[in-house]
Length: 440
Image 1 (cartoon, one colour):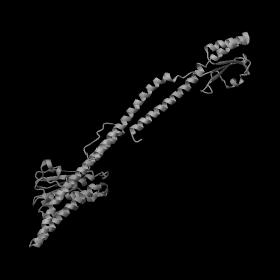
Image 2 (cartoon, one colour; image 1 turned 180 degrees about the vertical axis):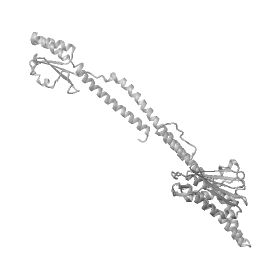
Image 3 (cartoon, helix red, strand yellow; image 1 turned 60 degrees about the vertical axis):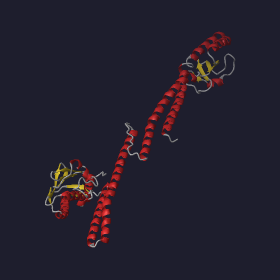
Image 4 (cartoon, helix red, strand yellow; image 1 turned 30 degrees about the horizontal axis):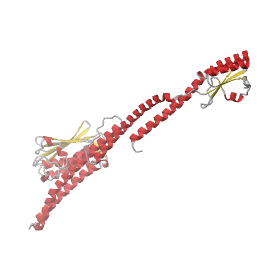
């Protein structure tokens, strides 16, 4: 049986039937014992014994017989009046066998099936009164309507219980089927507070993450295909130029330039893939941010000199945190190189590192055109370029800030941008007293 609804219903109903049978059995036994002790089989035998003794002692067997005959008219069963040895004082028969099976008056019965034999003894021990009677009837049919009513009520409760458990599970299974068939927007949206509700909410969270990941993957594939189309077309043109142009050196130089652009694009994509694909693989170590920043700035000076701008560094001393040095280096380098790309000639790119409330704050500012206010959050998305001043002709592929944002996020920091008028200011905050754990 695979249906949880049927299982719950069957087990609940079976438990109910078993309980009912046990209840009936206990009722019969307890009622029988109570009746034997205090009711139908109680002190009545003592009263009958006194009547038999009075009749026998005043009129002998003849009067005793009249007493017993009159007793049978009102009390069914067999009655015997014997001496201490079991000899019947009315007929003279030996009643010792039946006397041996009799239970003393007020004692619990030895058996619950067949006739019940009860014995009362005279005070002087000379006489015995034996009564053999059928047990009091237990009329089950008279109780049956009540038992059926109780059975129906409890069965209804069991059915409602099974329905309460099985219905949301069926709804969840239907939702999972729809989600598996491609309906990414379907959700359970349960308000239950129990384990089934928690299961539904866990599915909703999982479905939302999967939809986000699939949407990001589709967007990334679309962007990659769009970004690869232009360099591949230029590469094809450069190859044709090498084959047909008179100045082959110029064609070769153009070909190498396009190959380098394509290599940079692929390398940037690999950086994004590594950062997002396995966040648990980052190597934690103690990192001196001030030393790392000096190293990155020195590496970027050559590029800044080639574009006719300069780097101005101001750094606090000995800012240390736990993290992945290579990821942090890439993040800082990408932000600084992005500012260099859009800095006007003979301007300075200002780089500043200081401490603010347990956080290390890195500020990088250029004096370029900046970006529209509504696009400040979008520039950290892959392949986003907000205007003609920030396109692939400057040498970028639109992934530098996206890589920086992911690397900072893996270290529980944050990165954002704001217009400095003139120019753009990019700020990075990293925790100095928290180990980069629980990535992803």
